[in-house]
Length: 119
Image (cartoon, rainbow, N blue to C red):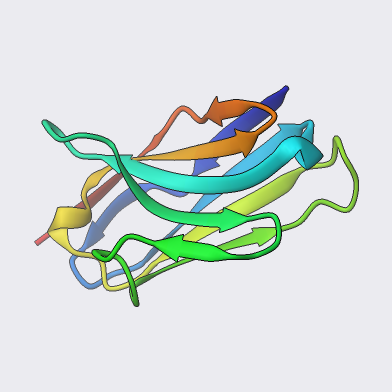
């Protein structure tokens, strides 16, 4: 099994920055890719950014050139591994609950962290 814990959300003014962290533990080597999703009130959950174990990345058009996803690969299974989402030049429309999702042998979601961007 894999466990995910997100952190780093908060309140920031438009144009500011935040860094989200997703700490994974358990069967780390079973994870093929980790993604950040977000869900704003009254909207569907959407993919924001994805990173594979090999380091390939994919971004939603709305966050390209503003958000960067990265990871600290674990050296061995059952060690901790963290995926980061660096968010720069934040806009009010980035306000949402951000979720971490790890896929591979298991499909695991974190509990979510609130990001609020004021205008």
